[in-house]
Structure formats: C-alpha cells, structure tokens
Image (cartoon, rainbow, N blue to C red; front, top):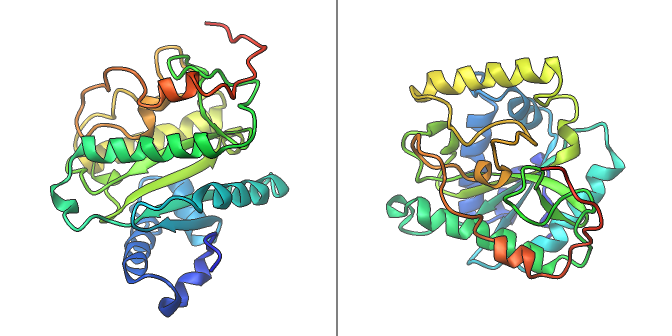
Length: 254
C-alpha cells in the first residue's frame, strides 16, 4: 500500500494497522477541535491539506521515498500549505519513556533521512546547525520539522497520543506567516497566547522566528517539557558536517 496517505484512507480501517487507526483518530479529533491552539494546523486537518505516513518496528526504509513523493506534490502545488505527518509505531512501554528516549529517536530518523538523501544540500542553507540560518534539508528542500510525543506532561499541546509524531513542513510555506510579516507576527502571537493559557506556563524559551540570531532552529524541533533551554549541540551535527553532501559556496552572514 502507498505509504503517502490522505484523510480518506483512514476510512479503510481494515487496510491499516490497528495502532495507526487509533493514533490517527486521536490526532484528528484533537487537531481539528476548535480549542486547538494552532489555527493553521486545525484548518489543514479539516480541509484535507495534510498527508500522512507511518513507520512500524523501527523500520524507516520507506520513509525517504515517501518524503520525496510528498515534496513532489508540494512543489507542484506551491500555493497550498501541504504538510506531512509521520506516525511512529508506539513502544509498548511508551508511558515510561522520557524526553531523552524520544529525542534520540527523533534525531536518528532525521540522520537516517540525511544519509539516504541522494541530493545535494541546499546552497542557501548552512550545514552547521549552530548557524541561525540552518534548517533541515532533504531532496534539496529546507524543511521545518516539529515533534510531538507522549512524554509531554507540562507542554500538553505537544502530546497528541501514544506515538512519536513528526511533522514535515517545507520552509517556503511559511513565507507569508512568519515573524517578518505583520499578519504572520499577529497570528504567531495569538497561537503563543493560546498555548500559554492551555499549558499554564510561559512559552518555551527556545521558540522564535527563523533566522533570529538568538535562536537555533534545531532546538525548536523537539522542545523540552519544561522552561529550560536545550543545552549542547545538535544531535546530528557531526553527521551533517562529515557527510560531504554540502555544496556551500555561499556564506551566510553571522
């Protein structure tokens, strides 16, 4: 079966793994609810603008092809804000697994995608995640990747069921809803206030606008469950810098 799924595919219950049906039902009911803080995510789920895929038994061999197919779809329809939602089969003991476990899995998946990518890294994106202009790149496409997982007890808007869920969004779809536009800035502020009210705690200090010199994109991918900034270096920094896939003729300003 094609692993690039659309909303209607989840009506074919007998063709999909039981755990995936359960995961999607929870995802859909939560994200499409009027109380969900991100209006863009709610609208995308309701309007069928999301694409979905899944991985079982820690087997991610089909994911590079699926992500490539998704990017083809996105490029053919640049005016549509398509995003790809990856459901990772939950562990039997998922209730006892912590941030370190999911963070390791999250970055292992991105490392695998990078290793399987047969395209050059984007000329416009530095390879070093410590550069504020960095973004994950696959198939030559800069992609913002966000993670949701069951370990979140405080950051409850990021707990969307029993699975590790990774959302792949091409950077270009944020062109008119970023901090650099009045509309985008207002929308982000509204989302931020809703999140703070639901979680009853300040917005996470690692979150911010792209290319903000005080922030790092990789730290925003899978945030901690508290108010402490992520420390250390990006888990896949060495993989990126030693891959030899970069074509970094242009230097970004510091």
